[in-house]
Length: 245
Ligand SMILES: [Zn+2]
Image (cartoon, rainbow, N blue to C red; front, side, top):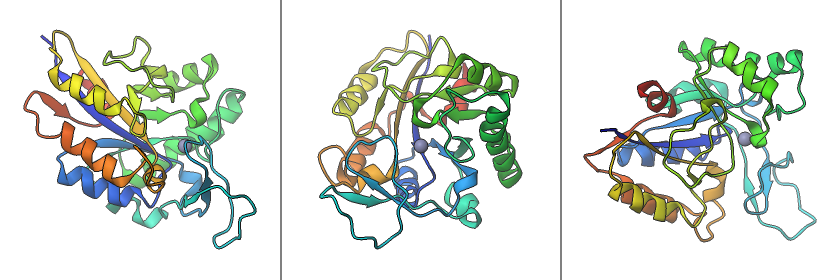
């Protein structure tokens, strides 16, 4: 007999996380926030829906192109502990570096530096990572393993509830803004835990600001409401889920 773990995971440490954490607490949910400690307080905007990266541009700039822009403002360092209280803080690369092409020194300057900085700030061990832009390599995985990471999250959804065979290249079940998120929640609720199961949904706070389809605050709250309050589901952070197994 196994257990059912539900986790949420949000990247980049954005101002929108404040609203998300409030909602999560309201619904009794827990999760992991992957932060870039070299970019605390940085302000910018994101262009278009579903882009995996963001554009650094000053606030108040008049945009030349008719896309929708939403704020991508990062929480300043002196608010981090208060905002994420009760949640897991994990790394995401010191300055959001894609890891694929980095050598040992590059990995140290990205992951190593981020881990150290966050551990000094929180007083807790950082044991989880999210690959910026989903960029990973065998060298990066080996480096994380050496640093004692328990798991590292990639980007592309698996659509499944299986714990990954390789925890250092772990694909989330889905993204909160994908059409199948609600379907997965409903089938997770029905699923028989004949082995350990994990439903991990990831996203970025800014996506809710688009206010379109699944990428909206209303949809996010509907999702939280649907998954919450089940006696057979353990609501936890990614590190708690990976530690249990
Ligand atoms: Zn990111």
